[in-house]
Every structure is written in structure tokens, then in C-alpha cells.
Length: 388
Image (spheres, rainbow, N blue to C red):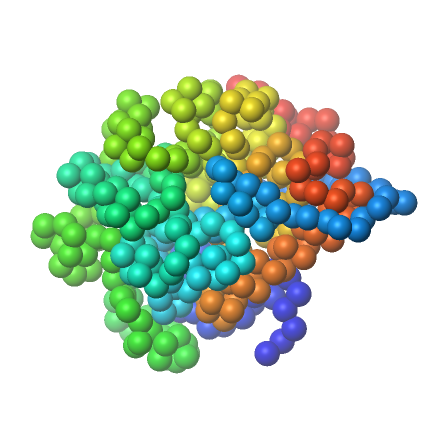
């Protein structure tokens, strides 16, 4: 096993071990993938202010996200099909997050169901909701999350319709994989993944199959999901979903200051500045570029988290210094999961924590709560080059 010192090391192992369609599902964006690339590269535009002769002893990355104590202000983002990256992937990721002391978010489009994850873990997790036209199903899904003891509902706002993702279409993405000559040839090179999947609790969408009339296998599931995402989702419906839940709510997919104001007005506990990892509107601004304007718009009216593009602890620090109270990682933990299972997720968290702690020290800070713009050198036009 090679020495793993950064997230890129995990990505290289991940690519070797996981079938191509699932690697491409995680490591791609929509259309030309411009926004997917910008999400990461725009972090490089921000420089750090090195400080010296500062007492760095007794540092702490501990913080809170929506009132929950966390070892560092990083949560595992909701990622669909995680159970196809590694057998029982959602369960393994949830266990790693709980042991490390950070939140785990289960996707509606997970392979392991809400009940599977709740039965296999002792720590309450967050549940991410995609809004469907079938409101009876949506209501039952919310109730299932309540019954499982989920501590927050993350409502995704930016997937009313599915962005065109060329690689997924060309690969014939499905769960489980459809056995075509192309996929069989690829699966033959991923024998370890195949052996592990034989012992998996599930190999289809656990939150949907068996919970919706007429959905009993994957052949009918694809058509149902294509028809069921709700294009009519608006702020009125979001408010009703929040009332239906009755607990802490995070609104994910905010990329505009006006939308951030609306989310704050509705009383969300937090918003996530996110463009769905560059998988929806290609050509949109990166999340980190939009963070300053959104912070200016909402200030301390609502807790702000940032998602999309984070690949290191330095990225986390930059987001926090620009005003975010928390961050979410998706691909970074998926690389670890696909590479090494639960141990890989733990390693991804260790890497990010080490980078965050070391960078914080070299910037002359002892606590993440003290991070701010004074720690950064930001281009004058950062986040403001583009005018509406």
C-alpha cells in the first residue's frame, strides 16, 4: 500500500479499483465541465498570509455546525450511489464520520436505505431530500428520516431537472451496472470490487425500491426518477417541507445572494453555497467565487456552509476565512471510500484535518473560530469580476 499524504493519492487508488461508470459518476460535471473545473481551480486564486513568532501551541479545529459539536467544520456531503463505490458504502462512510466526529449526510439516492444506516450506526446523521412530484412518497420519506432519528434535513434545491452529464449517458450509468460487453470488460479488471459487492446489503436504491408502488427493480426505477423530480419546486413548497420536518433544516444549492436572502427569510438553520459539484448548470460561477457576495447579503442571519471543489484542508481554511461556518466534502471522501472502504474515508478526513491544522498554525491562528479575511490575500476582483 503506497503512503497516502493527500487526497490525490486516494483518487489514484480509487480510479484503479472502482468500475469506470462509477468513477466517472463522481469525477465529472455537466456539459463542458467548466464549472466542475472552476470549483477547484478558483481556490488557487486565493493566497494565504504567513505569520511568524506567534504562539501556535494548543491549537483546536473543534467547532459547531448547526449547533452540533464537530471535530472540524467539515461534513460529508450527500452523494448518490455511494454504495456502488464500495459495498455498503453509505454505512462505512457514516461509521467513519461518526468515529472522527463530523456529520454524515445520507442521500435520497443512496444504495443503503435510511433504515440500513440507522441500524448500523449509533450516531444520528443528516438526511438529504430530493423533492418529488409524488408528495405522498416525499411525506413518507421525511417520516422515515424522523423515525430513524436523523438530526437534520438537507433539502437540495438545485436538482429540479437533471443537468446533462455526458459521461453518465455514454456509460449507461445504473445501479447495479447493466451487463453490456463494455461494462463486462471493465468489471473483469475490477475483480476486488466485484467480490466485495457480492456481500453488500443492497445493490439498488434502498430508499426507493420497495417503498413506492410499481417500483420493484432497477428497470422501472430509472423511468420513475426521470419523471419524479419536481420542476415546480418553489419557496412555498420549500416552506411546507420545512414545516413537515419540524426540525433543523439546511437548504443546499444556493449560488445567488437573492436566493440566500430568501432562505434566511424562511428560517433555514443553514444554507450550503453549492453548484452541485458542477454537475448541474455548467457555466455557473464556482461556489468559492460566490461566497463573498452571499456572506455580504446574509451576514449572520443564517449559518453559511460551502460545498463544491474542496480537496484539501487549505481549501477548508480559505472557505472559513471568507466567512463560512462549515464546509462539505463529497468527492474527497468518495475517493477514500472507493480506494479503501471505511479506512479510506477515515484517511481522507485525517488528511484534510492535518492540512487544516498545519495551515492554521502557519497562518498564526490557534482556533478555527478566529479565521477571517485577515488570513488571506484575495484578488481585488475576486467574486466580483462578473457583473449582471
